[in-house]
Image (cartoon, rainbow, N blue to C red; front, side, top):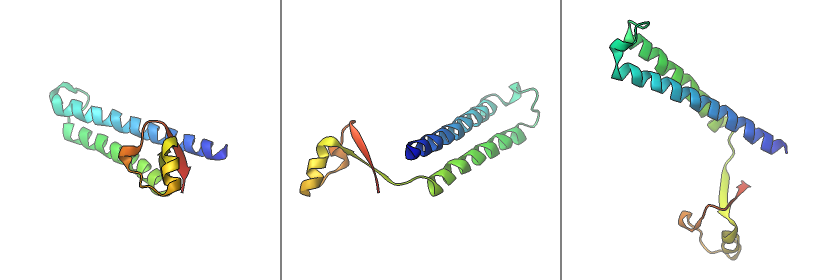
Length: 104
């Protein structure tokens, strides 16, 4: 149970960071497409830099999750368990959408 909670918390944190990256990326796209249309930001370059710095902050969060908190996981289909048991090679092409997750 604790493992599932851990995974859900890390997944939520990653999703939160990804959402912020997408928001700030969209703001940069707006500045790039229509820099004169943003009245409250007369210095478009500075505004874009600020948005990109925010993106970098949240990318750092994702990188830290990946580096320090994500365990390697193997996804194997139920049908492939027999192949593994008998020692036959299993490739990514052999896998389908019904997967089991195993920790290393």
